[in-house]
Amino acid sequence: MQELKSVGQGGPRPLCALPSSCGLCPRACGANRAAGERGVCGADGRLLVARAALHFWEEPPISGEDGSGTIFFAGCPLGCVYCQNAEIALAEHAREITVERLAAIMKELEVAGALNINCVTPTHYAPQIRAAVAQARARGVALPVLWNTGGYETVEAVRANGGCVDAYLTDFKYADPSLARRYSHAADYPEAALEALEAMVEEAGPVRYDEYRGQERLVGGVVVRHLMLPGALENSKAVVRLLHGRFGDAIRLSLMNQYTPVLARAAEAGSTRAAAVLAVSPELAETVPDDEYEALLDFADELGVRDYFWQEGGAAEESFIPPFDFTGV
Ligand code: SF4
Image (cartoon, rainbow, N blue to C red):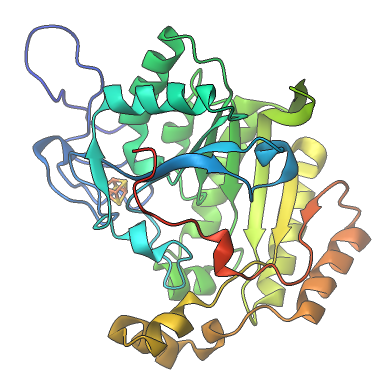
């Protein structure tokens, strides 16, 4: 376990404690977050949020018809070169809020009719989010709390979420370490994500639903998302094979084809960073071909994967990416 240090000294017990040598994600970059030092993920001592609103483009039992109460946190431990939310991934386009305000936002989302509290890219703010959930519960918020993560978590962090998180929406991006290194600078991703996923399944239990205002709603368990990348069918097949073999029906898979080539648009708009990425990985300028996605779905069917989520063709639209305009913050 990493050392934890209180934000405050003396007086009442602090609402949350940030690490003095951060190891909240597998990068374990050691940033002194308690002293305000910025980590590789872009997070420092502050709690940074870009949007909190109803969101309608998650899987059906997550968005329902009324919407998921989605809170987009800024910064990211993975920093994938093709990031679909690049605008906020560097934690530079964000607004600082307090833990108390975060708890109030959760209450406001419940009042607005949300099916759940959906914490997007939460890993690096886990202590603050857990403190906010505790406050929100004290205010009567009864919605399930979803941990919507890139999957690059530590086992210790997942264990620490026990009693706070009801269900995980976790990515499993890579089975291929070389692809993980190339796109996310994290060759340890397959191993780390698998260990974390085992802990999530133990903590969150089987996938469970209830009926909430006439809608089927996810209330527990683990949904594992895999975003197919252009030219990476073999990686996707390896992910499905690995997860189905290891977990079977203990998880629910979501196979996604909505990869949006935001890099190409950024490069056209003059981004030198995007142009540099595409010079090394030109395949990232394309969408996922329909026949590759169909091949992945056929592969899952042949393996005997049941009841997985999949997407209709033409899902690669920037309309799936919400405006990070501080709505609800
Ligand atoms: S969560 Fe951020 S600060 Fe903490 S170890 Fe990971 S990259 Fe570093």
